[in-house]
Length: 208
Image (cartoon, rainbow, N blue to C red; front, side):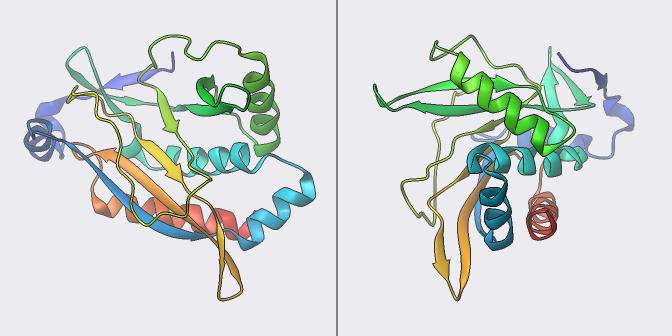
């Protein structure tokens, strides 16, 4: 498990907002927007990387840079993790069932793509146990170009793990576009932070 710091709620600027959203019937919200992957996709193909693994790294790298995406509830306390790892779905083409694979975040895209690809091949079990708090969840939907997406809800209000999705990419005005979605817990993440992630991620994809 990654290291975390317990937050002193009495002196935390977001304490009031957190408590209000924490008591909501559904404290999570989801936003879908488009990303331009024209440059990124070309580079990934040139390097013969898995597009899925490469994009998981890009999203995790950018989300880790934004503090609000690293807050979680642990033992009824609010904590801030130093780093968040990854958990993603991977389809078994023979059974058409997916497995959930956990992979530690790496410093470089090359390290991550290599480690994630090996882990996905090696793991035979569909599920290896409950996911930890210190992950970003990924569940790509590459068969559909969607404009909106919703998710199953565990019913646990303190489940603050962000969930990232994307759909089938397509050409638009000479660019390659992919629909991308972020589901986050409103106790920690506002629209402002979704906007910061969108900007950071697009900048990463443009410059990689």
